[in-house]
Length: 82
Figure 1 (cartoon, rainbow, N blue to C red):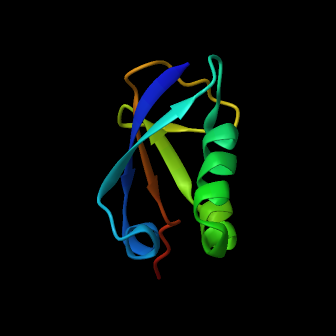
Figure 2: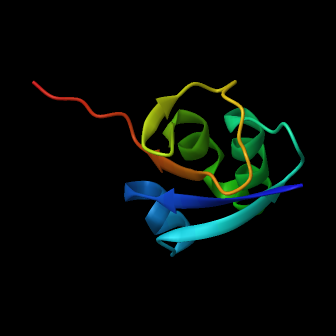
């Protein structure tokens, strides 16, 4: 098992009521597995969670990026501008 620290921003912070949360996942878990775990914890936020961008240790990461024990994952919304 690995433990990671998840940072929440914008809608995720509102949904959870937290700035961060420690999450325990199986070895070799990836961002998509983390999102599945968060959906299980916060089912009302499924659409929000699925659409969030992620970074691992301050580097953008895709859905299949593998997580390691002690990683810091930030979840935040897509940014748009004009």
